[in-house]
Structure formats: structure tokens, C-alpha cells
Length: 403
Image (tube, rainbow, N blue to C red; front, side, top):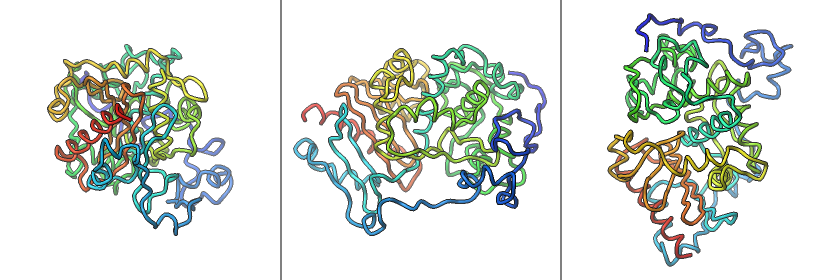
């Protein structure tokens, strides 16, 4: 990595371009909150208002139904896990679903949470990004062996000046980035503010693109370091090779092929850049369809999402020597990380997309099953919560052997 002076001004919204047009057919900078009702900006804004103004859902499920009792259909686990409902409640579960093959064998939704309701995935969003990149690798549009700066030259001089796309996919870049979600001084909170997830400070980079250019570190590669910025770098590469906005590429290459019941959503920053590392929301059933595509060798009802080789590479796991994070290896000694998925390295071959506050897309190849768990833990990420959740998911997997 070069020690060069910061190559761009992170407070200049035009410095990291070119980017895909956010408002097709409209002049640059149009519309704004003051102009979205006027021509020509209204041609875009009237159909995409949720990107400008906070938007509530008028649900197909009436409030009277959503406010009622929990939806509980756990009979299949009655003998094997008689305390399953209690354990779901104890881990602040909002939704829980088990899909074995094409059959939903168990579901749970807390009172007030409807089965057709979307839920924030947090960092399970990363695994969707990994599949999107995989589809572009399969198409020959991204070469994992090439340097990040071959695709995004604006990252020259940053920590990403040297590492390859593969290093970023597998979280193997040494970065000065503190992923402490409760520390206002941590880089992850600056990242959040730049992406519009927290109140922006005057000194913060103007958007996510600009934030990524400010990251520094040794840039050493080959050892695991979890860093949410890596996923947004991948999304920037996706935009550069396609010329389209990140969320549109996810739609074309992944979501449109799943047979999903509902559209997913993703939060966007002031530039319209999707928060790939944590901003996706969807239903439990639709997230299970993502896991189903991986277990089915990359194929979904609407066509191939990724190659069989990419899907099998996820299930095979990553470089175990690179995984030195004791918070993970203490529970899963054979664990690894690859292509934005956590790989348990256990006898069952479990693989998962994982997000803070208790989000999981858990694959159990041994029983051809997908387990989805949406939660709202009181804390973002602690050893205690992770132990409860990990043990529960393994126990559910093992119980599937008996039903």
C-alpha cells in the first residue's frame, strides 16, 4: 500500500465518481428534498420516494392481526427440542423458520411480527453481496486475483491499494478499523454516519464512497480481520464493472431468480449507494430462499444465481489457517470465512450468514435444511449471546436428524 497523501477530498461528493446515475434522465443533483415535487426530478422521485423521505409500510396484514398472539408452529421439534419455544423467546427471536428441502417444517413469529414482514438482516447482507460478486466472477466480469484498485482507482493510497478482490471477499486485509458498535469513536460508527445510519458530524466523509477512501492500515493480507467496510468496497466494484447501482445488480443477479414473495429493501446514503454490508431487509421465507440456492448448487427457481463451483466453495469453507479470531474459533475450532460467509468447520458442515443483534441464515447440508433466525438482542454482539445462538442453531440442526 502507498503512503501517499489522501488522493481525494472526502468532503467533496463528486470526488469519488463516476457512479451509476441515481436519478436516470435528471440533471446532476436533482432531485433534492426541496425539488423532488418539481420537474424533471419528479419523474424519478414519485416512483422511488422511499429514497428521499422516510416511508412507512401499509401492510397487507391488518394491525389487529399483527398485534395478536405469536405465530407458533414448532410441533415437528416437540420431542427432540421440547424447550425450543422458550429458547426462542429467551434469545429475543422475532422470526424463526426451518426449510427442509422445499418444505417449511417449523415457523415462529413473535407477537406483532407478521410472517410477510421484512426484517433488517444486518451483516447477513454481506452474504448476499458475496453471491452477487460470485455471479459476476462466474460471468468473467470480476477477477478475484486482480487488485481492488484495478477496478476502483479512487482507492489508491488507501488500505485497499494492494490487496486483491479475493482478500477483500475473505476479510483478509489488515485495516485500522474498529468494529466496536457501541463506541462513538470507532470507525464503524463513522461508517454508519457516512451511510446515513446515524446523525452525520461536520467532519465525517460526505458518503460511503468517500469514507472508504479514508481507511488506512498496514494492508497486510492473509489473516482474518472482520471489517464491514470490505463489503462496501465489493459493492463499489460491482457498480464499476456493471455501470448500474448496487441494488439493481442484486435484483438482476440474485433476488429476481429466487421466486421471492416480496421485494427486499436496502438503505442508501445521500449518494444513493446501497449499504451492502448491513442494510438489506427481507422476509424470513425469502431469506431462506437465498440459503436454498446455495444448498442447491447455485440454482434457484428463476435460474442459476452462481456456479456450482462458487456454491460448493462456500460450503467447503475457507482458509482455516487465516482464521485467528478467538471469538469464533473458541466455539468452532475448525471455523473459517470465505466469500462473505462464516463456515463452522464442524462435522455437519454448517455455514452461516451472521448479523449483529442475532440475525442468522444457517445452512445444514447434512439434512438439506436452511434455518433463518431474526432477533433483536439487547446488545449488538457479545460472547454470551453468540454462545446461546450458536448452541441453539446446532441443536436445531441435530434435531433435524430425527424428524
